Image: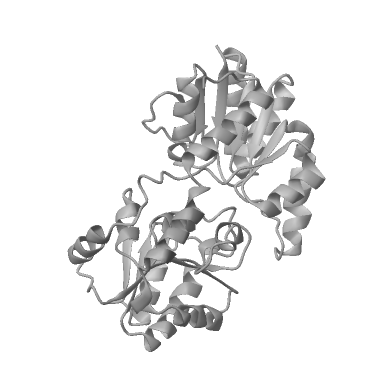
Length: 369
């Protein structure tokens, strides 16, 4: 029986990998999933490792030793690693068992156009040193693909992210009305939605300060924030200080986020750095207008999507972009269709098909039609 080991340093990453786990299991491949914590995921063997995002943490050495024992005892020859520390540990496994093949998926290199110079000195050099231990690299945006192909590995592939379920994310005018009623949101309000962890990279501090100024221009605006994270408490204090408590709703981590897209008008992202803005794809598939920072990963999603907006990370640019949108013309059928067409290339089935081709070529897996 063919076997594969997934590795990541993110406790909830297996939910993103689930369609791939199911796809592999359906084709008779035994899947092992190593990440911090145990989740109830069917069709795989869960391995709890104390991996840390800090690459120098001793916990990563403990994780490395545990996985060496696993691949030797289970005779695992194929490893697919995700996330920076997961990618580091996964590729070091090749030093302990040289015959394994390791694929690394980069969800956005930490070195990119506009990144601080020391990012290039450190992260680029680390990736360069790990390249000989990497059988193939998967990228999810064009900038990373070009860099990887040129400097790291000729066996570099590009897919359109992990993909989304287009049956789940779709416009629904009835849900918009009923959803707003449940959250006590007036039908006339101009509702912005941002789904992201409350961490520095997602740039909520910029967003709240900019929104406070925009709200002075458009009093009928509201901001929905979905997610959780270490900065949440401080951001709630900022909202209180800005006297926006009635205009900004913190809705926490939600499993049914499609419901919240359906009651919104505009999906936004003010992130400083992304591999690929899947929250923007979810917004497109839900028929929403998109407003996003002009960065790698966002450009891959909407640069070819008419009627949506990229802005430079400046408060005035953000406000001017929002002011270009006429709330009365939102929901135009032609614009919704253009957005749905733009979202189609991120269909989960297309991503599964592309990864199936990669696994066939690099791991010699056989898949049924």
